[in-house]
Structure formats: C-alpha cells, structure tokens
Length: 482
Image 1 (spheres, helix red, strand yellow):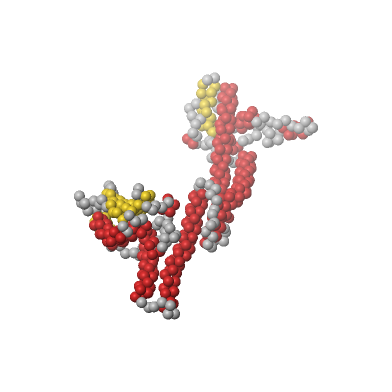
Image 2: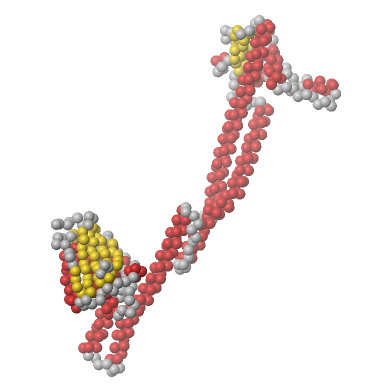
C-alpha cells in the first residue's frame, strides 16, 4: 500500500466498499431465498392439506368411520396423489409414441397419481372428532394448527401437517441451488461493474488533488505565481482557494522582501557613500579635518545607527522577542509627557497643537516605555510630514470597552491607496523627500507592532484637517477613575 499512489488507493477503497456491499447483498439474498422458498413450499403444502381434508371428509362420509384408514393405510397415499394430480395435471405423452409406449409413459412412477409421497405423508397426522390419533406417528402437540375435516357440516376429524424446517426434496434443492448460482453470478457481475466504474471515479476524485500536488511542488521551488483553478465549492474548492491565497501571500512577501533588501541597501549606501567620500577628501587633502567635517561625518554615522536600531527593534518585534513589562498605566500621563517632549520641534516647525485630553486618568494594561515610543514616533511623523503653520489635533476618547487615540494633522494628505501602505516597511509617500527629513520609513511599521502587541488596532484614515488621521484603539484595563 505504501508504494501505491493516491489514485489506486482511492480505487481500492471504493472497490472494497462495493465488494463488502455486494457480499452482504449476496448473503442476504441467499438467506432470503432459503427462508422465502421454504415459506412458499409450506404454503403450497397447506393448500394441499385443505384439498386433502376435503377428500378425507368425502371418504369418511362414504365409510361412516375412520376404520378404512386403519385397515388400508395406503388410502392416505392415494388421496395425497390425487391432490398432487389436481394441482399439477399430468403432461400428455408425445403424440408420436406408440400406444404401448404411451401407456408405459403414463404408468411411470414419477407421473403416477398413486405413488407414495413418503416425506409428505410422514408429516401428516389425522385425528378423530375427539382428537384421538387415527393416522400418523407424530406427536399432535408438535402441530401448531389443525384443519377440520367435515361431513355434511359436522366436524368428524382434524388434519394436521408438520411444517418443513428445511428443504429436502431434490427438485426443490436443485431449484434453490440454481437460484443461488444465479445470485453468485449477479454478485460477480456487480463487482466487475463496480471495478470498471471505480477506477475512472477514483481518477476524477483525485484529479484536483494531483493539481494541488503539482502546484505545491512548483510553489516550493520558488514559482510563487502558480495558481490552481477553483472548480467546485466542496473541500477541494476551499483547499484550492486557500492554496491560491497562500501563493499570493508568498508572492507578495517575496516581492516585499526583495524590495526591503533593495531599500535597505539604498538607505545604507547613501550615508556610507557620503562617509567614504568625505574621508577620501580628507585623506587626499581636498578637505581639511575640522570640527565641521567631523560633525558632517557624525551626522551620517547617527543616521546609520538610527536605521540599524530601527531595524533591530522591528526584527525583535517580528519574532516576539521585544520585551514588554506591562502594568496598569495612565494613558493620559504617557501621552502628555510625549507631547511635552515634542514641544521644541512643534515650535520650530511651527505647528498649532489642539489637545483636548481628559482631566481624569485612563488606565490601560501596557508597557509605558513602549507606549512612549509609539507616541514619539507618531508625533515625529506628523511634524516631519505636515506643512509649516499647519495643525495637529490629538484626542483621547474613552468608550465602553476601550480607548481611542486620534492623531489628526493638516495638509499635505495622501491618497487612499497610499494610506493602505503607510505601515509597510521602508515605505514613504514621497520618493523625492529627503532622507534627513523623512527617515527610513520604519517608524509606522514599529508603531503597528507595538499596538498589536497590546491587543489593539491601528489604521490610517483621511483627516478632516486635510492630512492623515492615525487612529489607535487599545483595550481598557478596568482601572478608570472619574
């Protein structure tokens, strides 16, 4: 079985199921044939008993007693033969036979109406009107019922027949044997038809699985553009949809990875090129080693350190290794401290600030340092990407089971397609924006990981002020005090 492919395994499973069904049907038909034919034979014999009872009544009427049976037991055999002759008329002899041959044919034992039917006769018992045995050696107590024997409306005796418990007649046994043989041939034919149908049916059932296996092999080889057709709405159809979704996700992740590597290389190459150029200029004597040149070199080093640190924080967050020391934290205090830290940059821009925060504490179960990092990143992002003399609105709204923090800034805004990509790594809306102002594009990706680590949600919407609206939802810890 280990070497058989799935198609032949399904074929054998279907064939085995059909074989079991055919076997049970064959056995049931065999049992039904035995029982049914036995009931049929007993019913025929009961009809014969009724005719025999009528003849015994006529014989009693002629003799006026049952002594004729006791004196001549062959009388029962003759009467039984007559009942058989009435129910099965003798076939006429062939007309081509001579007279002597025709007489011999009619006098053969198998056609003689007076032949002795020993098996049938041995199971008969005749009782008189007082239910005393007249004929038969069987115990009357073994008979279920008796047929009354009447003479001119008066019951003069009873006739009983012991039912067959099994077939014993050669003709009956031969008939049953032939029927069982026919049943066996039918069962074999059904099995052959099932085998002929099972193989194409197995191939039809396994075909979607083979397509999935081939597509999976291609996908594992790096062909992320492979897709499988969805041809049904059953489990195979759902599996095909899930496979296509997986392939699409892997394709997107691969493109994102390549873009990420390219962007990181670009981000690192620029400050390194500046560092290399300035160092070579100093070495060649084209530029003096002064505090100004050292400060320029230090700015590029800080830029590389910042990028590496952001990448490190993002990597830790992705693998779940970023440490979180959670406790009940007053969100209003953490947000107020972040705003106070950003005041110098807000005044330098300048930006107008609108912060109608609650005057009561709002508690969340969180890491205060990570929340401070979240708010610092969002404030720096708004300061960098909002035009001078613009506005930044920060609100905190408490709902039944959570708290919502809104950062709404003024122009410039971004399109809906760009808003969906704001939390992607190294994504910047404006490709021409200077890196000194715009950063590496990792801040919002880190923000998303921090929010998700606190079982919250973050999304970017269109701001009523014309810019971007960052909405954060966090669950309450239940420690709010009015």
